[in-house]
Image (cartoon, rainbow, N blue to C red):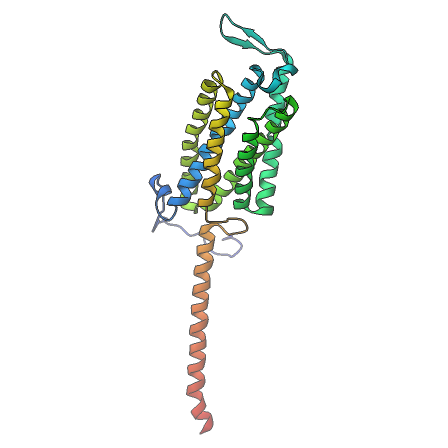
Length: 272
């Protein structure tokens, strides 16, 4: 660029006049306090159900919940307490993992079409309803359909979380906020897996009850999200545009005042 403009390359030291560093505590300070706690709660709930559901589905199949085991031949090893899965069952686990893909595709599409907050609303409330339907045994085919819908809505919920969170925070704290909240959410993943494995040995319905409570908490928490980030500039860009508009308006106003003053001074001379 310097060569194109035929000027010398500037030399010297770059002095930073101000610097903003994202501190961990700043994530939960004003004006982000309410939204940060809400997003953290949503992340914990989503990790709890998403990670736990993978173990729940395996236990539902192994323990023959709602006749699910009639599709597979599960071999129990009672001496060591382990379970040997057949080839068909491993293929089923692969299919279960693939079932989440439609949700991760629908999440971004829905966020752009309906908005981030609306996607939060329907994914959490629909996920709550479908999770509750797992308590009703209408047959193995109905259970498989419900599990597909559960994984779909959980995936949509997860996708919109990762879209909304970076868009909400300003640049100087964005990566810190995403890292801190994501780290805290791992507690939900650990809690979901632990409670699932413990409660499944007692009664699988107890695990489903905990998922219903977690999804209810997530559904109610979505009402604490105020800012819709769809189609909006990032916070830093919004501030820059406001400053530019104010400065431009001030400059235009000063110019108009100068023009009026000049005209008033010139009018008596013209009349004379």
